[in-house]
Image (cartoon, rainbow, N blue to C red; front, side, top):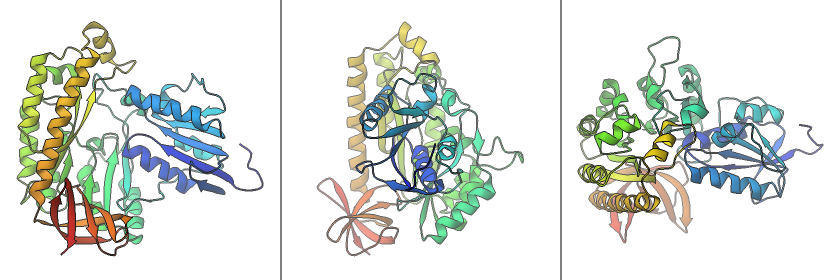
Length: 407
C-alpha cells in the first residue's frame, strides 16, 4: 500500500472480546507514520476488527463494513475475516485475517505492546484453543494454542507499571491452557499471575474454565494475589446438555470449583459466567435443571446467549436434527437473564457498608467518576480524581447503583 505525502489517517472499530480489544490497541501502537483518528472523523482507512462467535456478531461486522466502506477504504480483520477470507463480497474492502499482516500492509511491524487507553489494561497472554466444544467455531478460526513467552509478558508488565497503572487483566482465547505449547513444558497461568502481581499489583483474570483452576491459583487467591472476581463459563447446568456440548466437566465438579474459590477469600468473591439456552435437544426438563443449578450458586452476573448454530461445527448438524424453536430459546434466555439480574442486584446490595479499593476509570459528571471495584462492580465515586488512581471507598447501594465515599 503506497503512503501519501501526508500520514495516512487510520480509524479503528472493534467488535468482540478483550483479546480483540488488546489486538486493536496493539496494532495502533505498532503503526508508524500514520495518524490514528476516530471513526467519526474523516479517515483514509478504517480497520474493523471483527468477531464471529455468534451470527449477530457477524451481522454487526457486515453492517459496519457496508457503512464505513462508503467513506473510505476498509480493512476487515479478526475472526469474521478469517471465516470469509476467500469470500470477499464487499466493495472498497480488503480482507486481512491476521493483524500482523495489517501492520505490514501499513508499513509497520507488529510488536507486543499496546496503546492502553483504559484504566485497567488488558494484555493478551495467549491465543488459540484446542477444546473444540460442539457449538464453537473459534478453535477453527483462531488456530492452535500459542502462548506469549513469559519474558515478553514480563517486559510488557514492566511498561504497564512504569505508566502508573495499578491493575492488569490477563486475557486470551483459552488462558487456562497457557504454557501448554511452550518448550519448557512447565510454565503455566500461575506463573503469569505471579509475575503480574509482583510487577503491577492488582491482577484480574479473564474467562477461565473450571477444570483449569489448579492448586497454585487457589494458593495465590488465598494469599491475596488474585482479585476476588472470577469469570467461570458454565454454558449449561444440565449434565446431559454439557455432554452434548462436549464440555470438559459436569455440574458437580463445577460446583466444587466455585466452592473452593469461595473458601480462598474472607468474603464472597464476584462470580460471573456464560450460559447458552436452546442448545439442540435441550428439553424443558433440561432447561429446568439449568435454571435450578444457576439459582443455587452465588453468581454476581451472567451473560446469556440463545444458541446460534455456527457453520462447520458439530452443533450445526445437531440443530438440523433436533432444533429448539427460536421463540423457546428467547423465552428461556429471558428467564435466565431475569435470574442473573436479581442475583446482580442482591450481590451489590450485600456490598453496601463494606470498604473496597476501586480503580478510577473516567469522569462522568462534574466531580463524579466511574470506577471499578476489586469485585468487578461499577462504582460512582464523588470527588476529584484522575484515571488510574486507586482509591479506598465505603460502598452504598442507592437506586439500583453502587456509590463510593472516599474512606
